[in-house]
Length: 82
Image (cartoon, rainbow, N blue to C red; front, side, top):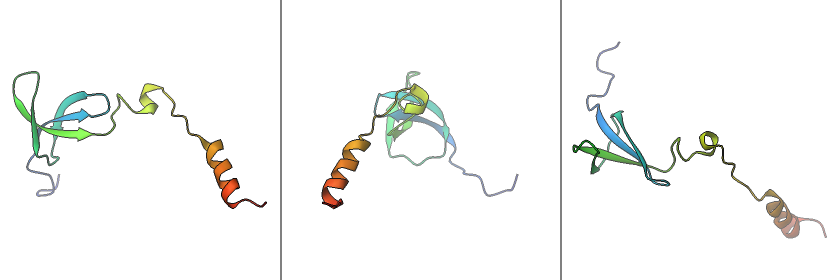
């Protein structure tokens, strides 16, 4: 490995999915300002996520419905030939 290219602040960080409050502890060099107390009683930096493997539709198997027909109708009504 090359010297001097790896981060020096590699430490344990809690990542929290804000959509379902799922949290996990892992090693990271991400910059954070908040801290949280973990299950083991220690305080770790907290990084908030919008989506994780517990809430992403690909991993959960839940499909997101998109109203494409409504969008097409709106477009036709606004810009279509009359």
